[in-house]
Image 1 (tube, each protein chain N blue to C red):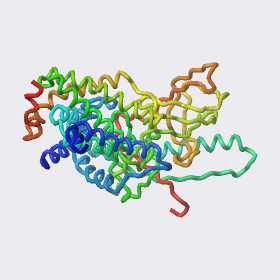
Image 2 (image 1 turned 30 degrees about the horizontal axis):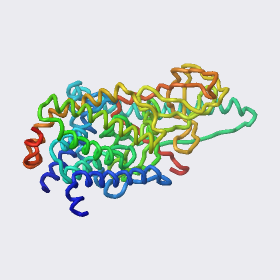
Image 3 (image 1 turned 180 degrees about the vertical axis):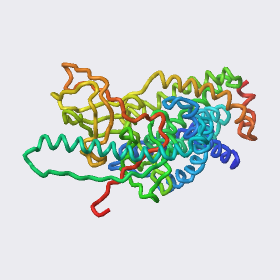
Length: 283
Length: 168
């Protein structure tokens, strides 16, 4: 028997490894609750993040020189600062619009006021996912910088995604993984800013398109409508810009219309992002 | 033997670094080459032994560590690709660049079929994929295979003695 296995080890050994990997795969896929990377995975990810930083910064440096970076370095720094300010103002603007809408609906309730403040922590993108199907980026800030799982990431253009901590996308003390809203596994609770109709935005794997699902059956949606986060689910703060409706296909036999949303953020040119840290009272 | 494992591990890590940092500067964001897949195909050409299978598993585990998909997906697919590559390389010679290209094309299609088949089984909410992008990715990976072949065959001991003669 043993000789038989030894004779055909070229077949049995890969088969055994294949079965082991299949067991790991099915255990991961059907595990109850969220799975987290083990310490070894975290250590490898954190170690590799340093050469990733080196290569990314060097590549950007070379590209920067190519684009007259030397002459524009001060302008770039100022631009980064202004981007942060702009992002804050954009969020504030959305927040004010939200208040205005609420004010309209709740006119009788004099003095109604909602106040949510955020702090924005800038972070640089140092790496992307190995697979082109998966849309996850690695940033140079980690748990050491108080980055936690579920933290929202934005730019001045809108919502980027959220910090995750899973096998293959770890949150380490030195770096963190951000699941982009365009990833096929991403889901964001949203609403149409104009009509307040709620739905879920799902990533398609493409940088240009998002699917708007589960919208109320009789919701009135027009091309150009702004889609914002609804705040439901508790992951993303309410009122963050997600994108604009680009296509509405109504099928009489379907419950929900087929709606495409163009993300507000240009994901192909992502170098810096801002992490949204909610400020508690007294902060 | 330990040097061969080290070579595969270091080469795999270099591939991960290039793929996660520089590839998007050179290629389109939705169209990235998979150097680890190319390495597994070459291992299938070179090593028809349990060590080759273990090295393929190592590369699969490395890919799983840096991909936000289900853990074990790439271990499973890479072992399968390695196994098919070893079986096929006994029947058809992949020693010339056109042969390697055709081999890698076929194995690339098999690899994508496995990846999305497993994703469909284990993660049904995965979503849609662009067939055009996938096809282009398979072609890019296949084009890289003859380029990586000399690098791998250069490393002492990686090409099993006698394997060349068997293929001829």
